Length: 420
Image (tube, rainbow, N blue to C red):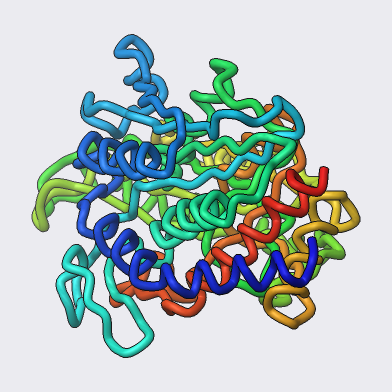
């Protein structure tokens, strides 16, 4: 990568600043809320058209109807379209694959602006999905377009996938494409939010479980005739809570945004439901657990530990029934910091932004794991947006961060493919 080429790319992308804002805004305006997965088809078609405009060969890959219930049980039978594209005229290898997801979490209440009517206030663009991660999709598109507009010949190929359902595990999104051998890559960049100076080279895994206690409903005036499922769930809660005492001794020596992220974490009761009325002893109670795993931990061992806690409670009190259902299992993933991909991305950030990149393991779980664990390809997460505002009300992205990230992505394309 020569200084002249780098400056040419920078100038090109600076001139496309308004286009970055426009694409991000138009993507945010699609209410692609997951669950259940609304408006996916409209957003996918928009993305397809944008990729066609920059000369990519594209297609929309829908999850087959016979697999919808299995891969998207939360999806109410709605379609799961995934957009894939490749730049023609390049050699087959090496291939740099850019990935992103267009689904967003529900907006929630308390917004100062309408979550799906993007608003630009100074340098901040507000709207659900602005950081997580529709600005990342825009940055990818503009980076590829800039390389083409600058007439830089590539020896390798560029491939993209913009997918459904990342927010619920990516089983109907990136994993569906990989399982069906529709991704061809030597390197992968997942454009999740972090910021233009941060490389997320690793992420945690997760075990989501739903626990259901079955007691005996009865009249609230005669509770002694029933079995209070909620009270039994409280006993289970306290037993599972004891697992946290071991967390400080389980850690990885990875850089993280917060010291606590080097250890496992657990959120108990993200969703809780019980009973049918104030004057009815609850005969059923359901509670969820979100247990985050650091690399090196075993999903099987984590599940066993939770089940053993339930067993202990039932050994003390056999008056109730209990079921446990694992709703999502995701392995941790990591690409070594000294990998070729990390080194080249490091060079791009340092050259384009004049700073030393920061490497972190994120506490979230990403589609990155599908590319690392299932496809076996070096993969890192790099994109605009701020982790601290993702999934929150008044989500926003800093416009300059989209510009900077797009510059780095364009630089990386040249380092990996033009200089290959």
